[in-house]
Amino acid sequence: MSQKLGKQLIRTVVTALAAIAFGIFPASETTNHITYAEVNSLTPSVEWSLEQYPNYYSIEGKSNINTKDFPKLYTTTEKVYKKSGRSTKRVTVSDLQYAALDGYGRSGAAYGIITKDMIAMSAGYREKWESNPEPSGWYTYHFKETGKLATEANYLHSKSKVKRTSNNSYESIVLSNGKIRNGYLFDRSHLIADSLGGRPFRNNLITGTRTQNVGNNDRKGGMQYIENKVLNYINHNPQVHVYYKAVPIYSGSELLPRAVVVSALSSDGKIDETVRVFNTVNGFTINYQYGGISHDKGMEASSESEAEDITDESTPAAEPADEEAMETEAAANDTIIYVTSNGQSKVYWYNKDHLPEKVNLNKVVEMTEQEALNRGKHHSSLEKINQ
Image 1: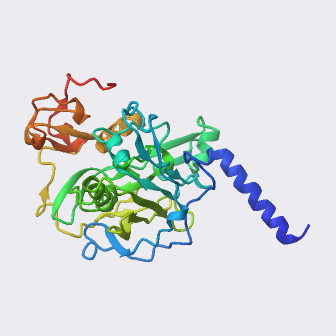
Image 2: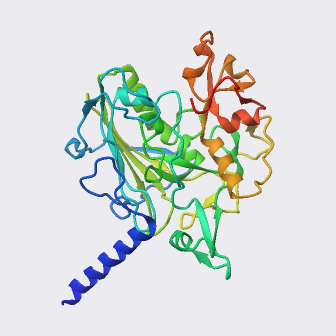
Image 3: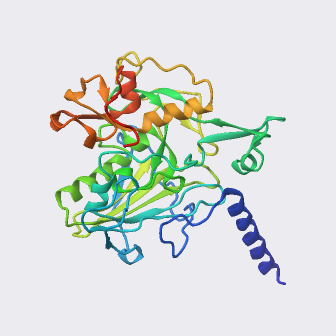
């Protein structure tokens, strides 16, 4: 056996062992080939600064999408999106594709064709997370006996000997508009948004900063820039579909991507662009290798005394007593809810379709569940959660 062939065999065996350890197998609905996390093909070539990229994204040019690489559209009457029920009409959809997790447990490319029917079937509520959705870098692992750094594979092999700790923390973020956003620093950030039909599972998620996910929380920044552009265009042009691909960009073995590169091409050519969304946040140093932050905050935009606090009534929550409590609060931070009367109502709803018939939908306000809780609101007793 040649030396070169021997090395190739070793690499194959190592990859197979990693797949067994992490459960890393194809995760797309119809998988003809596997795409892994991209490291070298798209390197983090653009440096982020608040002054240059206040909305946490950069438009890089046209999409360069090859439509032949995408799954085909088809029509069906089957239940396409969980809990949406069976369609009463034939709907046009595509099978969204999700890369298998790589040897580090990282998500890779996610892509597919977004249609009006897919958007309609996912509107009005958010899917619950599938089992163990936390993306790479969400936790840090240590051996209990020695305190030395461990891996996720170590934890899965022997949970009694390895402790995992959430890397998320409750922080005050100075936004580019001068306001302060109080809340958890990291989100389970979708590669293909829930509103576009994306699945709420690990292969479609990264550990993304709140600003990477939603920018200033005004629908104009972060991943929401391109997501809402596609969503709004399809809603106004229902005959159009959009080829959509999101690729997290990692550096070396880092567990958190430095950016997500999103390409979108509409069937009529009106949308044709590639966007780089920066996975960073003003005033904090991200630990991309293992997750979390370094505690050397230096606010760039303005001091806390000068900036307007987004959550007037919100006093930073007490540190959760355990990991389960942390995850519960983080989930509330991600969930979008609906409040009537221009946001003045004391109750909120998870699904717009469950609102009373007499409600003026023009006066319904969206916010995260955590924001609603911070404002003293509670879930409406009239809405059945499992409905």
